Length: 304
Length: 304
Image 1 (tube, one colour):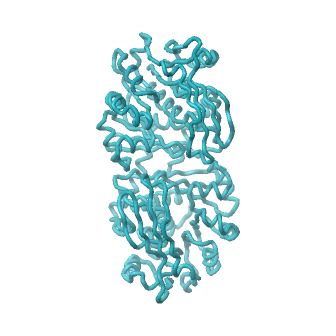
Image 2 (spheres, each protein chain N blue to C red):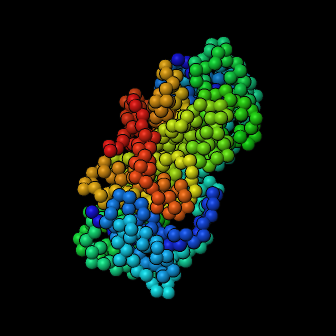
Image 3 (cartoon, each protein chain N blue to C red):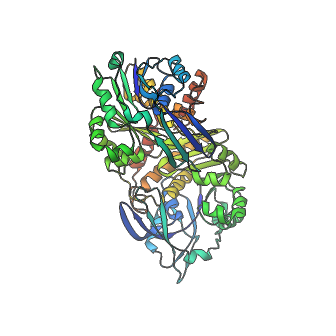
């Protein structure tokens, strides 16, 4: 099945306690697409870049089965740029620079082919753009997942609620779930969020794993403790990519299938943080992926 | 088998976003003993209190199978008192008052019977007291678990290292594991900590669950998302109590058994936070306990 991804392609400058990287390739959609490409081979990408964005990066995506015809390249424009620095224990991230550049004129227009995509992943962007994309779909995708953040809750509350009404799965972190619902208990938060539209709630907790809420059920996938951690940037998007890539390749949407997708997303996030930027995410062998998924299952195994 | 517990009995004043409690019964050993009493019926307690400590609380412990002959009651003395306040999202706890009172003269003397206890739980106290207790054992307990905190790493480093050399299991949180080892990666931290003495490392992460490291293996138990959260005080100690209570009632110390103990500890911690102080921990039915343990297994279940 086909997967349509909407999100940013960007340059990132990143400083973590373990190193520094200047103007490397980043952006939510980049991470999502690379992670998804390990599970799904019919991916379409909607984004906007300047002509400063390296052509070989677009070729590399195309070589992974990503259709890049929906990529708007603004001649003479500069791509979105973000710079950030992580605290010593990685628990805090300070944004140093945000240059929207061409992103400020992002007005997504979906190529005809894209409008019948089976699955839709709305990366973290202004809810208005997420709504514009949904409006252009000719038939409703089988699964729509929306990623968002506290910033949109603070600034574009009404649009966010409008977007939420139309999606199947919401992906946010625990603090955002609490802010969105006004409830501290995540069990109560999930109930409030279900009433806003989504049937599934994915709560990403970074190095503390991820929850999946569905009706009265809850599933939890831990984050694997890793030998090497270099850079958490893009982990959440890699999670979303692995998650949606896996679902796009499955026929059913049973609860157990969504759980499996959570494990695949967690596996991709765990690869992502092992190196700066996309370095590891671009180079995962089938064997590594299989072993990683197995580790996620073993780590919670206990006989009673 | 018998379980010897060393730790504080205290008064706590607690303020959380969900309520307030003035001078209620607290202390590490209180929580440990109550939690352990659901699994083990031969518990011995070493602690010190003033005669302001309610006699009915000691009777209640005795009724749960806790031998309180090792409890030193200082006539005219005041029991240890702690007051603290939690931040809005419970992520931070500020200590408002610490009155050591009789705790400052704690010089543990083990009754003869206690010196041959099978299992030893060293609650969070100055490492010097933990060492004094270990020195008084006539034969080495089958399992010694030590709980400690960053404060002792900052102030009594040498004593702590001496104590660590003699224990089987160390129980700390993730930041403390990083501080103790000088490693950010918990996998690397575990290796350093194993070289200091312990064979098992339990990393408590509060609402984010718990890791168990053993040789090259790792096990993870999530924290259950709860409908009601009132007061996190004593959750770590309730965890330790459930963990050691379970182990004290098992003959073997296989890795799988230790994993089971982690689940039992997590279950007790989850009950603890549902009410202020000991309110829930004192009133758990067998059915509730069984159901809670089952929930901990179900929450990570996925078929592949």
